[in-house]
Length: 341
Image (cartoon, rainbow, N blue to C red; front, top):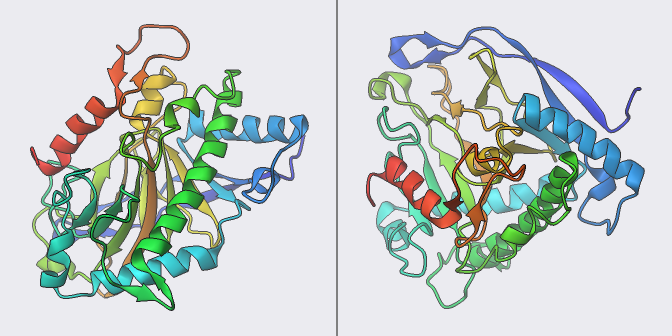
């Protein structure tokens, strides 16, 4: 049966130069699902059983076979995303001395909140530090120090907090559909995320900035973002341009689409454990740009994590993975990316 809600886009990865080592991406064909989420967008309260059935079937296919899906019609607009990115970029372009007070690790309430400088993070610990900067918004409180950057009349804090809450609502809707995919209670994934935005949950809105880079100046094996899988439940990713590559089941990397107004959603590692490998978390990366490309790249990632004290056990009742605390699991993963900071 043809469904108006889903279209599968065949993507071919372009052959790209991976630094002076000339490591190349092979040409590959894989279907990346693009799913119209209009029936459950942020301006809708409910959806019909038939609409839920269609969304669930298509989302299940995406998350069990590919691990990624592009959602369109979510209610989060291209203009909203651009507004947040423009504000973030103003911060990233400040002199380093003005960014240092906001460094990750300077906030006692949550050590993951704040600015991550260039080459500080190694998402693939076997490579040199990633050629990107980030600002992690984990704390929404007003009694902490925030950058004084403004966009029009809105402050850095107000713009990021508002977008954080929009992403939170969208992620909870996605989690409800995911539960329906597996014929589970609709709140089975939502309930352990009830504290998103508080000090009891480590969900983070991450502004990512990739400055211009000359591939010949990069260190041996260095990338803009090393190969990795995400840590928590799901991730929402908004991109300013293409650049992200996703590893297919055959082991080849393909370019993820960048659709204005679309959000790329992927399964993360805790969700794969939670679903006993029914939903798959896959590796992805951002290569160095071609030698003649001096452009910057931006992205906004909303990394969704269960509440810190949630015990993640296999939802099918099996013992395929032992129970693990969401908070403890995240701490261990951070050790791999940042050393023991």
